[in-house]
Length: 421
Image (tube, rainbow, N blue to C red; front, side, top):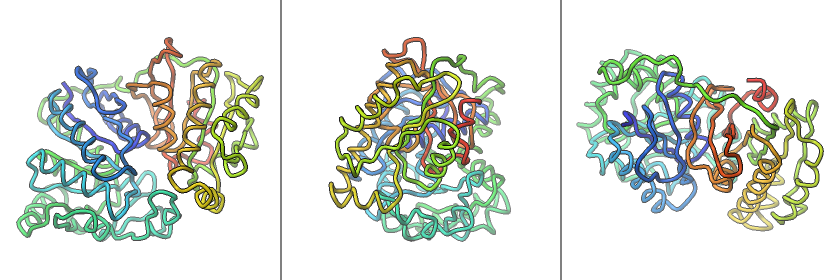
């Protein structure tokens, strides 16, 4: 039975979370969509939903269904995982889902902490920083689906829920688990059912995790998960593991498909141009998914190798994205790119690609659905938050290695070093 049941609001976030748990000694499996019984054997099961940008009521319904499946399998604690940049709108979906899960679990209080210092996401006095920049000055204010224009997460979360939202400030978190527990009790007694937790270092995240050992629900980014496995070890429920990240050996051709328009992914594509074959699709010039897929299929002929990847990208700078959205509408523009890249990924696998990197949360969701992936065994990290995973699908019964990368994650050379890892 899983000790920890996790619900992630997108596919790359689920992989990021599962990787964190593996790094801290839990065997983790990621399942795609609301799982059906029986669940795979693992210390932690991470349910990957594509619920970040759907209507809030649908996100709540899917999250509650996932929660029921995890509780039915015996999970002792639930973790609701969202992006380290708190991607959401004033209508949700973080607040509504957290509120519904608290109600289902009978939780009187829960923290909200998307911090991930290893990737430059820190929270101080309730304000989220991306590197040295406030969230609303980091480029996230131009996100095509969830523009983040306010760095004060207490305000942001407060606009999404009817529950009172407070702050676990740096001065308290710095003092450690006992002080954190006292402040959480005080906040709860004062009518604050949710609290943004400051965290600037991994030590802060470990302290927060320990303080939440008895909480039925924890919410945050993957960073908050680093302190949870030790709680189960202290309780005698989780043995020490040295092989939690073991995967079968890789083989076959290798490729990258990218749909993210983040600064990080655009930089990764830029560096890759100097080293490997790169095809940059122009959805604005060719707003037809089938035509884009056909262009990619013709281009990949004779270029696939086991020693180096090919990169096929539909990523674009903000002005091109805005122009496409103005022409087609926001939802249709996103759907066009996702459909094209999902079909391209299927064609790559059909031609023998067995190591595939996918960049972008929405793109990753579309690709795994198109390939028919149902679960992923989590392996070692390439960069913080991005592990290799392994699955079997009808088109690759011998096994397929996948790396599902959040658009904002990974060093500039990620697309190159992933295949040397």
